[in-house]
Length: 180
Image 1 (tube, one colour):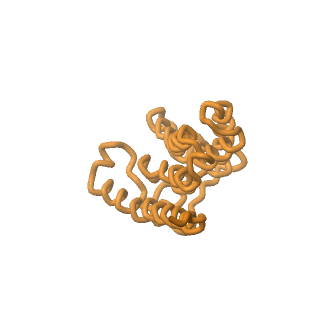
Image 2 (cartoon, one colour):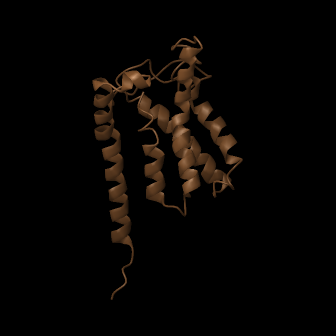
Image 3 (cartoon, one colour):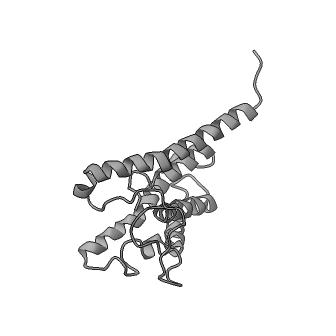
């Protein structure tokens, strides 16, 4: 899995690109939290649920159906998130789906159950370039954890920063300038 430090970067980047008028901060912060939500499935290990189970790690909580359900629930609170129902629903669904997409780019684990409950098959992308994160704080605070952070900085954070910079520069140079 990618780390809980990196999953929120995707919705944050989109929020910064689109701006507060389109994606208000309460919605962006909720999207950042929603992007972490699927990894609460690590509790399954403590409950004795096997990794490969549909209810194990990277199982149903990483599925498109899960994203749809959570986005539907979150959209009930669209007014508090200062957004329309549709924008709220789309952004939260996107944030959760982005979690599975990042995990499918990692170098380890057993894949992602994108299409649960239709199938329990797990998927990876053909390109797996994000170092898989160890599970647990003690395992993370090691040399391996540092290699994972370096990998994520290079393969997720840097591209997001470049995308954000490109979008801001494009907006700046395409906006009419006032002459002094």
